[in-house]
Image 1: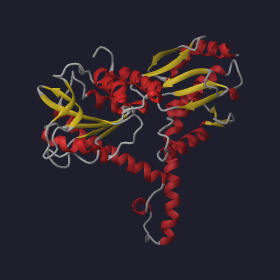
Image 2: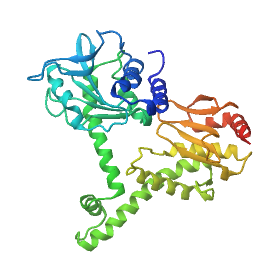
Image 3: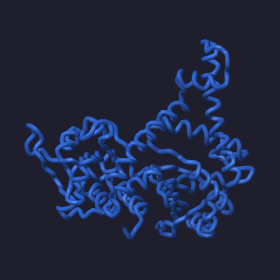
Image 4: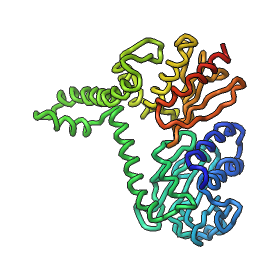
Amino acid sequence: MSVDISERLASLAGKIEQQRSSIETEEATKNAFVMPFISLVLGYDVFNPNEVVPEFTADVGTKKGEKIDYAIVKDDEVQILIECKHIGAPLNIKHASQLFRYFAVANARIAVLTNGDEYQFFTDLDAPNRMDEKPFLVVQITDLDAAHVPELRKLTKDVFDLDSIISAAEELKYVGELKRVLAAQFVSPDVEWVKFLTGRVYEGAFTQKVRDQFTALVSKAAKQFLNDRINDRLKAALGGQVVAPDNTTVSSSEASEHVAEASVEAADRKDGIDTTLEEIEAFQIVRAIACSEVAPSRIAQRDNKSYFGILLDDNNRRPIARLWFNTSQKYIGLFDAEKNETREPIETLDEIYKFADRIRETVHYYD
């Protein structure tokens, strides 16, 4: 594919953000978001019935003429089945009944349940020819984890290798589940987790008193562990002192503690937005540049699922910059006098300083 998959995913994410409010049906979701995913991201020709079969039909027991939204064919075999729901619709296992029925009959090894933004990928790790009840990979286009990009690349037409996909699926499935378990333990450690860690540092009996004491200690240690890991990076990027979100000046260790607590709390957030350390560091760099023109208190941050916004006076109509950090290739979005955005690729946060003059000019457009 001539354009990197990361750029295609970023483009699709922008399209979803712009158009999702106007999409009212499942059919519109397929046309606006799912077909571009199959075509632009995965590289299959949606207009070639030898590659992509819409309304795929296979008789399943007493279910005659039942259809599934798309079947992707590779090497003359149905490899991927896709079932679509309306954009924004919650996805759960009850929505996958047709995928379950078709999975064995069509001899496909990959099944996908999607609402046009979230994609759940299934295979048959638990029992041969029977679709698993839990996905091995969950991807949200507008809030993309960079670690998922290589896994999506394996599904593209040019490099599709079923053996490689299946071999990676088990690891992906269990790593994902372990991450969720660890995140939950950082937020609210359960008794077994507390007992396990206590046994590594305390030789006495695990009494109720000891349990209560170490439950608090484990939670405190988890936050301090994240704090220690973050602290060095903040020091390296920002020096000894940084500007906190409330516009007060704090030490880098205090700032990293704030970020560590936010990272732990993010595991339990319901809005799906996870502000990363890199985004905070980049915001501080942009703010440091813009502070030569306006008061620091006027430079605000507003995180979204697809990008991290930096605004003047916390006003969406006064964007200073946008951080597009949800793909393997990171971009900083810069604005001209007409508020047209240009995305500039960056490899390291230090490269933001190359755009200092443009950032200062943008501030002057509004002031």
